[in-house]
Image (cartoon, rainbow, N blue to C red):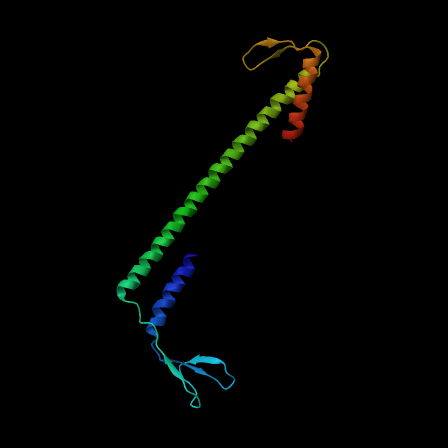
Length: 150
């Protein structure tokens, strides 16, 4: 993007300095032609070129170009910061999922052991689930592990 703006600015500056007279004419096939040296056998019309930009206009265009470049750099920096933030959030979410997978696999292993099972919940309360509760917990843990853990 920056290169295109600079090229356009330079083309504008250099085209203004090339002040050769240009002509427009219609050739024998009826096609409109342009050039700096018309053929002698047709009526050529001189074309008035736009006046060269003033030094102030050139300076203003240069400043606008520099401002565009700075704005683009600022947008690029913001985009990179957002990408980095998103990547860190994704990594944190993945790490949390892996932690849960480890805990849930361990809990599933305990629940599948024969005999009476004693579990501690997140608040530190001890519980002994019934067979129905135990089976429901096993199904929920297996579903989560199958869906989220790899």
